[in-house]
Amino acid sequence: DTGVSQDPRHKITKRGQNVTFRCDPISEHNRLYWYRQTLGQGPEFLTYFQNEAQLEKSRLLSDRFSAERPKGSFSTLEIQRTEQGDSAMYLCASSLVPEDTDTQYFGPGTRLTVL
Amino acid sequence: AQSVAQPEDQVNVAEGNPLTVKCTYSVSGNPYLFWYVQYPNRGLQFLLKYITGDNLVKGSYGFEAEFNKSQTSFHLKKPSALVSDSALYFCAVRDVRNRLAFGKGNQVVVIP
Image (spheres, chains in turn red, orange):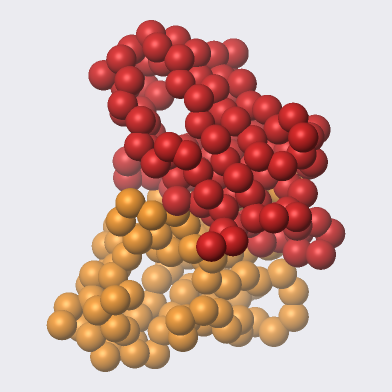
């Protein structure tokens, strides 16, 4: 399968713990996006990378959140000192610019539950 | 800011009947519009997009969407619904900074 992959698919943690998610984009895709989806809502933009550079960050991304894409391939999203309000589906997407700038292809998501 | 609205929470349709899922948009400048579908515990699957050109856009799985500038709408349609089309459908608009803004989604239920 050459689609976007995310790991883990599910994560249960206790409030106050740190968690890290990984996203592997479609091979050769140079843009990588993170979104968050809460129950009953559409996904909300968090941040995106062009190669290894983080070009945009949403105000939703508090200082407890950090995202990296060190080699311009996979990306990690870390949440420190998790809170119950962080419980959500975290979605990763990738695209190829400029050939297909407009279409973002999504992974299966990581569902986070904070107890 | 760019935004989309999906006015209905749930759309019920009998198998074999036409399916329409509504979306209206609000943008400054030219709209870049998308439809995605989400099955339970799965990510979003791209269905189709409107960037420019013909107002009728054809996409995956027999879906199409009609762009209407005067009504600021981008409704998703399928001539004959299948039970397997039951899923959550999201309309989205891309802003100038390449961020997608999604609607709240429509649950489609196709009744056998």
